[in-house]
Image (cartoon, rainbow, N blue to C red; front, side, top):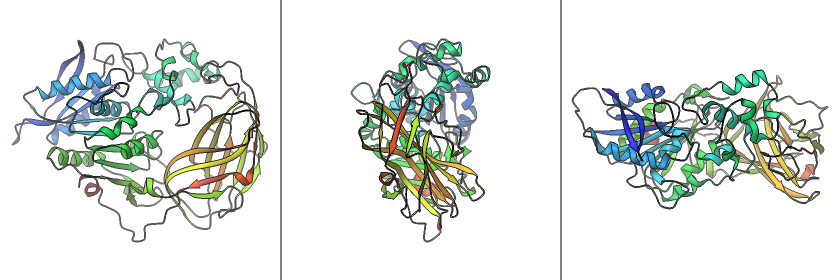
Length: 513
C-alpha cells in the first residue's frame, strides 16, 4: 500500500511517498498525516507505516531540492508555498477524506507550521490550512536557529548543520567532524563567513543565515492560528524556549509535552530522566490526532512537563507561571561565595570553552561563584535568568552565564547556559539580564551550584571580537576587561514546591482530552 508519486509545486516535482492503511473493515477515504522533510523521506518509512496501521494515509515528501525532489534547495525559502500545494494535492485524492494533520520534527516542524500560518515573511495566513499540526523540537527559522534570543551567534550547531545539509541534494552527517579531525582549529579561523572555504565545500547559503537579526517571525504569527497544535520538546534541546514560546503564543487550542530530553526527544534522555519519562510519543500523537479529526479538538492551552530527577509530570502552565526567586550569588539562602574573577579578562584569542566544565582557580578568564552544599533538594520549574552588575572596557561585549551542578564526588553536570550582548560606552556600569531558558529538574541536596560568568562560550558560540564589528565578518580581536560587583549579581530561579500528593497524571488524558 506504498507508492512514490511526484507532486508538482510551481512546476517543480516533489518526490512523495504515499502510505495507505492496509485493507480491512475501513476502506477509506482516510484522514492524512503529511511530513515534509529535508532529511530523506525514506528515513520516515517506519513512522509512516505506523500512521497507516492506525488508519491514516501517511504522506512523506522530500522538500524542494533534497533527495528525490527537483528544484534548488534553499532552506526556509519555499516551504509555505510547497506545503500549500501538497495539501491541495492530498485533498484532491480519492483516498483522502479532506482532513489533514501536518507533522514534523526540527526543520520538518517548521514545514508543518508554515502550512498553517503561511510564509512568516509575507502578510496573510495560509489558504486552506491543515486541520491539526504537530511540531516537535521546532527549528523556527534561519535567524532563530542561528542565534540565541540575545542575538549571539550559535557557531558549532550551525556549522555542523550546514556542513551536513546545506546546499546539497543529500546529507553527510559526519562532514564537520571529519574536517575537525584534519583541522582541529577549523572553527577558530577568521572570518566566520569564510567557513565554507576551510570546509572545502561550496556553501552559497552560508552567509545568508547571518544576514538578519533574530525576529521570531513564526511565534509572532502564531496568535492568528486557529488550528489545534501539539508542541513536543525537551528541556535539554537547544530550541526548548522556542517550543514553549510557540505553545504559549498559539491562537488555537494548544497542548505541550516537555520532557527531560534532547533534540531527539525520548531517544536522547538527559540527566535525571526516569522510567516514568519513557513516553510513547507516537501513541500519544495518534490519540491526539484522532481526537482532532473526530471533531473533538482538545480545548484551551494545557499539557504536561516532566521534572528530571523525580518521577513526576506537572501541568505545563507551571513552566510559565512559577515566579522566579532572586538569589544573590554571594551570601543569600544558598550561602554563595565568589571564588575568583571579580575582575577578569575576556580574551577571544583564548576563549572560555563550551566543552570544558573544569574549574581552574588559576584562570583569569571568568568569574566563578560557588554555593555551599545544598541542605535540601532544590526543585526548579520554569524560566531562569541571571542578573549581572558590571562593566566592560570595550564598546561591545557578550556575557555568558553557565550554571554547573557539582555532586559530592566532584562530578560536574551542566544545568543551564545563557547569553546577553551589550553595546555601551566603555566603562559604563549597568545591569545585564542573561536569560537561561526553561528548567525542569531537581538539584539534590549535597550538591554545590557553580556559576561561571565569562565573555565567551566557544565553539558553541562565535567569539565576540569586542571591536564593535560583526562577529561573522571580523578578523581583528581585542581582549575585554570586565569588572563585576559581586553583591549586585544574582540568579533568578523558578523554585517550585514538590508535588504534595505524589500522583502522576495520565498523559493520554492530559493531551487528548
